[in-house]
Length: 306
Image (tube, rainbow, N blue to C red; front, side, top):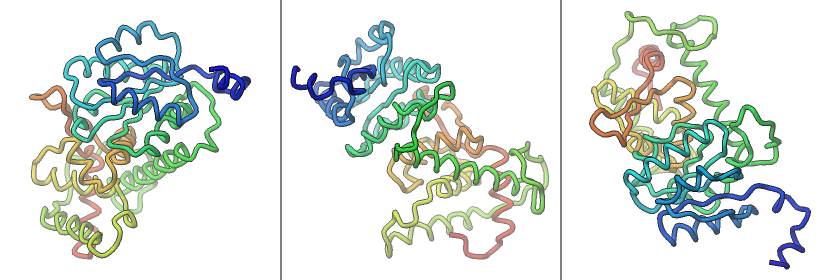
């Protein structure tokens, strides 16, 4: 301990609040600890899942809460996620939740705050980036933070800018051509072009075929892929759970969830609770986004759209 004191004394290592780790197993605790330490932050305590609620009530301050999950913790996990989501949204602390892909649906049903980073089957680099982004304060409007040097925060800002651009485009399309750009309006009830389900399926298939000839990440465009998938589902009158939409995005689940949350915040997607399963939500196109997508396909007609 003395060696660490000599090396870091006067550094932000000791001035910063610690990170509280919540985990559902010893292996999960060790994995979370490695990430926190690799990020240059200190660990305040490691708490088992069943004791997390009590500890969070007593926690005075924290740089972040890191929740590491290996399996489905059922009701205790749900309560913890709801508490973390509420606290993070209120600005009490930022949070990161790391979990396997199998937990995407129950996680997303409880987490909606942009102050909570979700890492799904993430690499160590993904995990460190998520913690760096969470502790940067990038989404805390009431705090000032210099995130210019934070690469992951910069990428997410670019993501948000790109979604803003898409939202503006959808707003123009939803009212037809040659209109003045403005916030997405309420879509008109009538005069919505019909779109062939087969056309949308062909576009999706053509996009997927590219990966047979080129590296798939050369064409990563999760926003458009999700828009296409939701339009196809809407035409077929099918509901799309979060886990399925992440697959349709054709990017790592962590990236897909960030896009999904941002598109929802921008009013392009709508979350709808599953009436039969409180641990699952469906995602739909908003009314305005639906109209815009249909008008887009009507204007391009039979031209190749990839």
